[in-house]
Length: 437
Image (cartoon, rainbow, N blue to C red; front, side, top):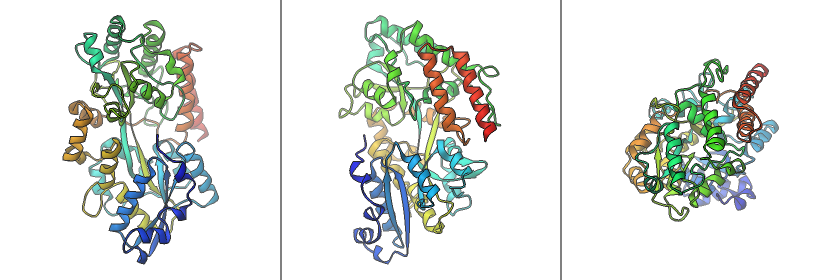
């Protein structure tokens, strides 16, 4: 987990601000513009280093950086917006984008110098994640996809010939693992409500070629498009009928399930893309070297990818330092003055954090890191190229709908309600939220 305690007590002045920033980087004593910049405190020392690199290339700008608590980030930022003390630039989750735009807090960046060139090299799902009602509101902090992972040694021991790419194949593989006595519950997955708690469900629906919403953000599930119903019924059978999915997952969130998997529990799981390098790193994983990815299992193999998402750098609608703020987020979320994706590459090589630009697929350092992490590069490339956005992600009501739907899925897996009733309740919730605006 990121070490955040020391950073959370620092004031904005104490972190790369004013004279401290100027003293740290030669030439900054003459900086004409100071830009305030906030983000959640994931490895803030890395962000600090990237900001120093920006100031070295832009000595007329100093950056006052404040890392905020990750879990309370949205609430803290909303409080700053309401108080009128928001920073000039900041991180935004795609799940908050629509609501923050509707509140008048974000400035669109369409037409800013160099943006069109950056957009041309982004994965398509990334640009979609940063847009709302036809306007773009940020550059990518990072983008990633949900991945399905398995222990290849365990599958080989169970005589499973190839990794599963459909839910039927996943069922059969898990039953073979169970029959061989390798794991009582071959599938280990966290279903406790959290920020990523609906990601597997979305990924299975999207990979199956299904839809939850139409272009008007009206729900098409569970009757018009029955994909979501089929997925949820499969999950129920996996836990209660075939008993191949660990029921303890109802008490685990994504991070806890990840750590249990890396500790040797279960054989198949799903998680965020940057978990695979960790899973094959002996410092964190007991099964390092044995974990591989497969195409996300679907009701039918239609060549579609899983759920993708993005976190972005955005600019305050109230800032009076638009040029300086844009130069900051175009560096942090794009290229440096040498034409390199400096920050995205730095994050990827350090932590496996997903990058948003297609040319990095061909970067020799990145390719080496991917091979060292154990990726099947063909599968990885296919999954990122075909990743899809959650269809209602831009709606101002997404976060509330997501939390409600997670609870419905959990109720189904607990046996407290039926899949059809749960999805009908979720669809009705979406309609009500859309009507409320």
